[in-house]
Image (cartoon, rainbow, N blue to C red; front, top):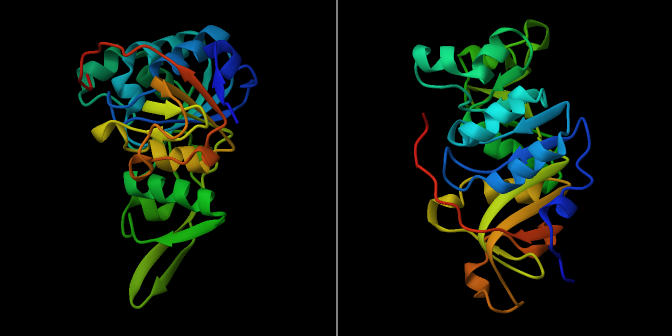
Length: 246
């Protein structure tokens, strides 16, 4: 099955208001910037974006546009804010969070990865030790007080574990170095990061790929995400970006 779309607008046509979208990337590395830009142009509202570790901190211009357009309802991330107070005062996203206009939910990085993995495996929830004895154990870490719901814990073999629920987004936006027409993907080095686990967790995975090849041209041992998890692929140019998180 050929999963390649000619236009990025067609690939995201059914991403409607209220969608929950996983955004791949680790700070500036492996971020689906052109899919994000298409989402900005589409002006879809009331969005919840679930991340891994700061892809929107790395994609500063895209985040600012989402905030300016009033498209964001909530961001789930392990690293969602600038590192310094001075940067934060200049950051529209941080100011919107402080004003209660956008919700920020902070989740430990490994916990996020495991919640995606659980969703991909069809597991409703998992007990994890990460955050036990900290604020993470007490409640959801949210900027909205009303959403700081208590968490369930259990003790196994003398150690406290926290019940964490699977995270299954409606869509995943991922960036790949190479895709074939059947949706098999290969990522480049550390740009792999959260992309494979997000691609397997989402209901619909949409890929921007720098290169598109015919089926069989990617060595089977080099396929990082099997095509069964991918619904749509669109080819994009390789962008030149400044690698940084501020």
